Image 1 (cartoon, chains in turn blue, brown):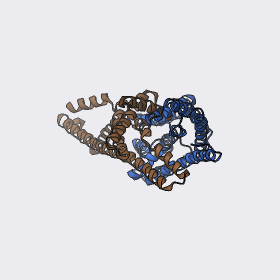
Image 2 (image 1 turned 60 degrees about the vertical axis):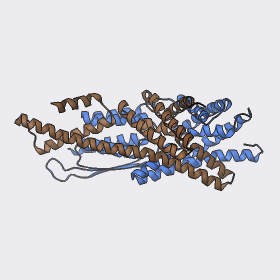
Image 3 (image 1 turned 135 degrees about the horizontal axis):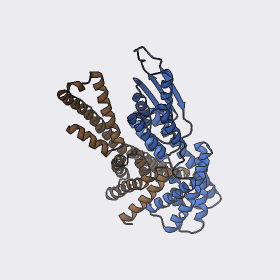
Length: 264
Length: 203
């Protein structure tokens, strides 16, 4: 394989891994995809280490005459992560096509670029609306009454929309969830004044369900069980920061409310 | 509240989560189904045995099995079905209660509900990991079987026709290719590929 082709192939594998990792793919899936992509184009030795904050790949391959080739290594720092499972599914499908159907590297790169540019399947308004649906039906499962159902629905639409916009503007996740938590508590307290039937606690639980780092916690523990200790700890740390931020926001507003004399 | 009604609520809530995680549109209904089944298992076992952690553990296992099944029939990575499905099980309420207990400076209660939250998270991951690692083992086994099948097919060819004989290196490549096909069949279950593989074997 020529020097330039090798480099292009490595970049292609890196971009595929990056899209997956940025959009919520699991560590082992990213590592596996990168290894398979590289091996399919004849690299004899491929190692990839993936953590939530970066991808490290190195490849080695003897050239046609069997001489030692140069070793290549690429690193990529990942800063922003959001969850867009459609892109993970698309890259997964791309990897299958690339390995089995023998796309050329140029075509592969084009396909990846178009995956990266695809807008998410649901826009911000749809996400906000479904955020409302989620939280309201979730508190119905916990035994909420109709006024609570309605208030959770409308309040969560507002909360979800706010955190989506803040995430788009690339604020730090601590800030996003701090604001989200505080907003959730304020809205719940305001709505709680409308009717004595509305329990502020229950509405807040509904609202923060769209923010709780459940996926990060679960993936963190799962990575740790599977032996990906660095990813496991990093994800658990991420989850902890998000949980603390939400608790900070909610707790601050609730304390303030208790301080000025309102009851829960 | 009847079980059926709760199933419907869980279904709708899970679809909402699926939208938050931007799953492909065509898999929304199946994601909802997986989550609703998971939550119903949780609910029934929790009512019967009154243990949140055990119920969550079993629900996560059922959810992982359904997710793997859908992953094959829909040719999608299983995360698309499992991630929205686990969110109703996630210890959000326990986390909230921990926070409230800390605010009220009731540290005993905080430790109690806090450890419950951690146990629930462990139960979810444990349930998922057990099912997924068993599946990974089965996949490896199937890949090895596919490799052996490729060798057998080649041996048959050799008997029939000496000119199609492969040298060991090419044979190795052939084996690798068959294994790879088997690997992707797991992720993207393809009935046509299955049929052609069967036909090949019959020959």
